[in-house]
Image (cartoon, rainbow, N blue to C red):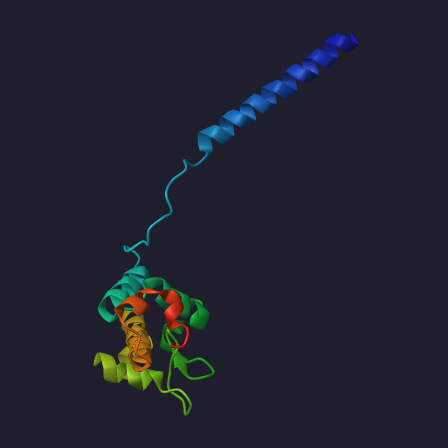
Length: 150
């Protein structure tokens, strides 16, 4: 009798393993290439548009936005440093990036505060202005590492 019980246990274990493997294979994801930026999402579209318009790498813009605000515009309300939006365009005695963005883009400071797309474009304009002041040429602007001083 112990042989029959051991055989049944092995058969059950094999059946469970086969069912588990089948379930994993049936629900697994196929290997694919790295995903491209989703340009259907409004924020991704804004980063792509700003990158194209101002010659600032899209990934750099997204990284700055994430570092400054975790990509949260806070519905136009200021941070403690009086910074606004995804790009944290600031208006305080030591940082006037909000006003600079307004000057460079022609957008009102009110729109730059509350509109995510305008805010991202404003941030890109300010970064490009810094790059121009540093003398970065087109090839250097394509290299994310060249932007560190900006």
